[in-house]
Image 1 (tube, helix red, strand yellow):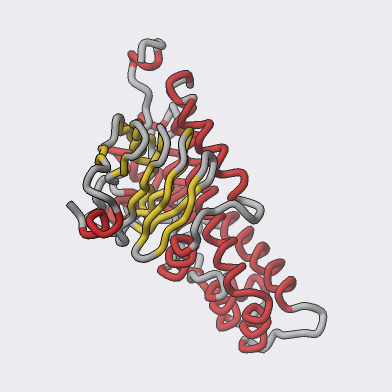
Image 2 (image 1 turned 90 degrees about the horizontal axis):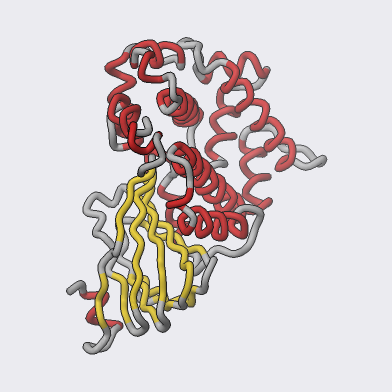
Length: 315
């Protein structure tokens, strides 16, 4: 039994493992159902390369992480770093979903992961109040969905988590840090550097999205097109806890992954998909894809293709 368990829980409290484990595209979902006075033993993440999201369909729990505790109610969302042990202690009969997502699929920095997992539960801001109920409703209704719907919704959930991390990092940085970044790049103005930075960042991202196919896309070509110094371009993405190169790679992988999941994808060569989204060759694409998502492009395509039984409604 883990040291965290021995420290916080009395001997008469039961440990419970998952009643069901499902893989939905990029998500691994473990669902736990038990009576009160149980603690959940999460599946161990030996690599520390995942984030775990937790949301209750029913019940209440005390989430234990290190020497900190937090109360969790239905629709309360919590996020845990896979490298840090955590333990939900359930005080009522409960159903709990734990969702693991590879960090590579989110392009999260260490700072963003620490900021998300440091929060007790996530209930404030534009994203968190939407994501908790969405995740619970999605997982509760999963058996009733047509085969392709869970894969599309899993992609949506992943995008929400990425937005949540960016939102959390921006809140942690605050307007003072935004202004300092702009001043350091020689672009601070009295009219509001934080807002100007965000607008420029949106334009840069739109420029990248429109040219993902272009293998010559680079910080230098982007800076020239946007009429800004390369140094300032790097500062923009440093303020997001990322880099321009990482963002380009992430967007190319996202679009390639979406294309491979389309129904007509089995008829398209993986190498053609790699070329279409700006990768130098299929080998580089395959290595990058596996590093981000934990599977090869072909494995992803096969996983996201509904089986004949599922397509016939028997799954």
